[in-house]
Image (cartoon, rainbow, N blue to C red; front, side, top):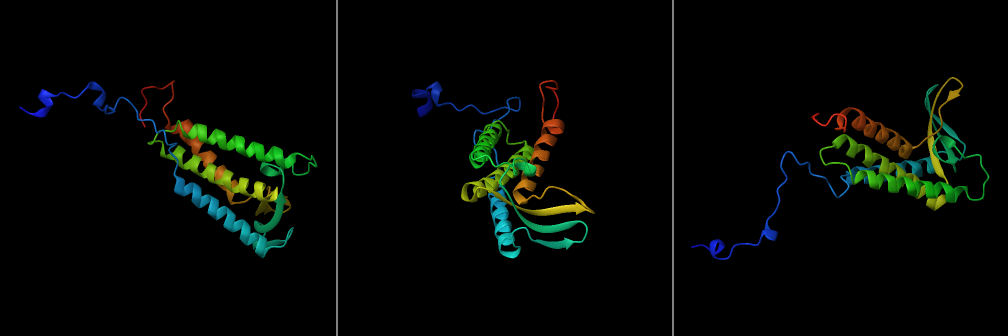
Length: 191
């Protein structure tokens, strides 16, 4: 007679194994932390290089009539919004907005399933970019922008690696939401 039949284990010791019908939800946030860290390091390194290589408001042509490296300070938010504002609380406002965005990313990441790789990559990129720009805002009160894409006299807003990571990450998240994730309207759809 074995010990299990003499002393049966209480039901509380049993472990539930998820079945294929019950999806596993990640409580760790499901982010690729290495990718987030890589974006922060790459963003900060490129901003450091621009500070050392290009004088403030200076420019270096990379591809004529298409791409320059510039050195500008953006005390506003994305695409230079609020950059011209002289409001005394602008830095506080933009920093609080960055923290709110980070809280939103963290909340959304908690609901991403491990198998939703495209959304996890997107959120990791967004988080890395948001942290990179937040470091600048906390340390300097502005963000260094340096990529100037233009054609003739038309210029896109100057941006940086963090902005690019946020944009690409948002595209990944939207692709996942629109084309890859299960939705309540299509409960039987498979990945």
